[in-house]
Image (spheres, rainbow, N blue to C red):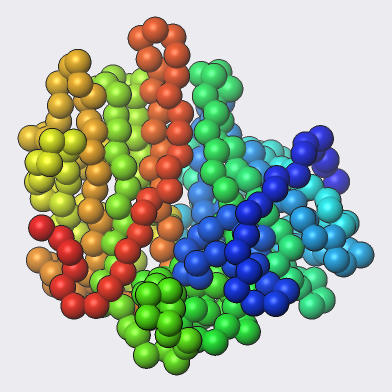
Length: 355
């Protein structure tokens, strides 16, 4: 088993119940989880882009913990699986390139191929991973860190792997995920519109359960920033959703785009897969594009579903959502910009607060 010489991260947690640490339920927050979700990895087929992953047992209660790694393509089709055994306080280290090139089957590797630069030629392997806890009497023991790196370009960005907390004992069924088709999150914390709305009610009104609230809309609000209009500057919007029983992927939307001068333009936006990676240059309206010396593109996107301007797209408040904005640039002075920002989220009833 690979090891990492590192200092374990110290997490700040808020206790809402004896023996269990939670922040706000319904939100992917930095607390230990029972399972770990790596919602995306990006590996270049010919370049040096790679994704490094660490998973740490921060409690060390059991003699041996067993995690079942399930690796999926953008359509949530399982293309690889493996068993990971961890001892107390162990750190498991892996990287997506090693798994893809040295452990997967050729067919599984081909299933991960995507075209990210829009030239009709597949250039990257893209997918996501679920580390499912198969330990007897599993607990919220694990944290994870993800590094998206391009060694040749000197770029390193990171984000916290998603902790899927045990939700079997929560007072409200809205906070527990269901079992999807192919990807099983039953018994774990839900990152859905219903869960976010219900958890917010706990904080604002003192509601203590009952499952009475059902969300009627959901929003992701990612920051966008493209430093210039060359190939050396990119901004990818990454949206992960679960496999929804009986409901297809989100599909086409018509969304509002904002620049930093409060100007707003609506434009088409498509979420074609369970894991969708959208190049901001392909979707941001030209009428909002800044010119030097300002940023080429800077602002945010109001991603709202359901889209009331289009026919129903199968909105379901139980669908799990995660969103990120990956921004990269090789600057003229030789410095680099490389950051992954989590998208803010909102849910509610009635009319969504879009202009």
